[in-house]
Length: 459
Ligand SMILES: Cc1ncc(COP(=O)(O)O)c(C=O)c1O
Ligand SMILES: N[C@@H](CCCC[NH3+])C(=O)O
View 1 (spheres, helix red, strand yellow):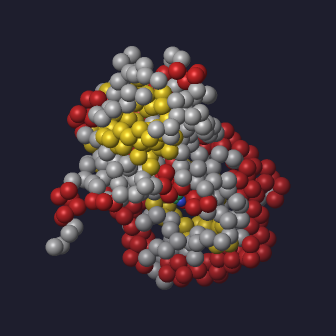
View 2 (cartoon, rainbow, N blue to C red):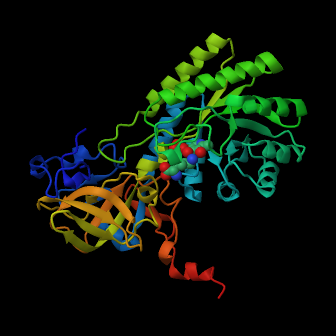
View 3 (spheres, rainbow, N blue to C red):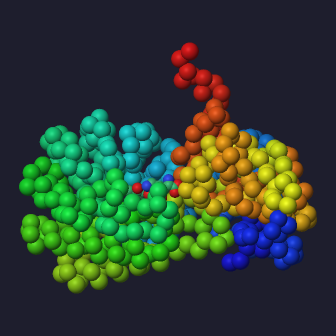
């Protein structure tokens, strides 16, 4: 798909501050909506963005801005797509991408399992009635309190990440199901901060040097914990499936070594999450079904070659399920043209509701969501209201030249790692998450207030 209009928020590239000529020709805006936008989103003839049968102008009036607008139908459809694609394999939704009680209930209804990585995520899952047996618990530094709570509540599996953790868990003297997290040495092609399987980092047991094998040997020799298999997660926002294939091969070779040398055939294998999504029109992510087919094939081929039984497979997608389901709605405040350069468009949120641009140099897009404009496109930078020059939401976007105070801007692809990584920097209260479906809207995470912030301040 080629981006062709400021209205679809799909334009990127260095075209000068007034944009290329083709950008000013009329186009079918709705044809440009996928795959950046949630499935129920479209623009009416008046240029107003609609989600779940409601207009953003109405939603802004009712719930204020900024707000994360969550398309429940879209989220459910992606849960189902992953479940269907992976068939018998277990899909653990990675709660770190975005978690609240409503999401937990939807996951239960759609038959997904849940990956949590802290006592707080575990508490949220349990408070919303998630079956503990369907929860997997991750983390490189789980506390004794967190481990005890997980074991007492009957969490389905704990992914052990260090020898210290094996000792802590074993001290509870319960036959807890565990997986061993392995760093397989794959350099995933993604931002350095979100790659997790190269050797020089904090997660898991290294395959090289034998510590992953030693972890298995120790657990089996001690005979306290119930070792189910190995786990590999190579990073996040990955487009190239070959990294998953290499990691599957390496982990299965380890599984074979455990069988040959320790006499135990481990019955499970988790290949983690990390499937990339589109943030701009230039991103071209794989379908869940293509990824699932490639993973299933490599596991089947490799098992056949190594004469292993097929392990029960699981995966942990977060971003690919929730990322595209949500966009952030902002109101434009100050508009500051810098002659010959670009126009700075300030919105009423920023790095406190989306840290990804500042942290990972992530690319986003934006569209005018509250009206139609025939004005020529100008090169704009969408920035927040925080006291940082790096407080950028969208680095480069073509917006109509008549962009003005009070306009609404929508930024797609903010379902994952935006609300969950939101902060109160500059004492800015965090925005609500509003779920929209079939013409109905409900607040699933309410807006923080200044009273909420003051409530923690003991004076
Ligand atoms: C262990 C583990 N599983 C799953 C995920 C989910 O990743 P993503 O949201 O990129 O699918 C992460 C985050 O990168 C992770 O650390
Ligand atoms: N938070 C990161 C991804 C890391 C996920 C957890 N391992 C992001 O926004 O892309």
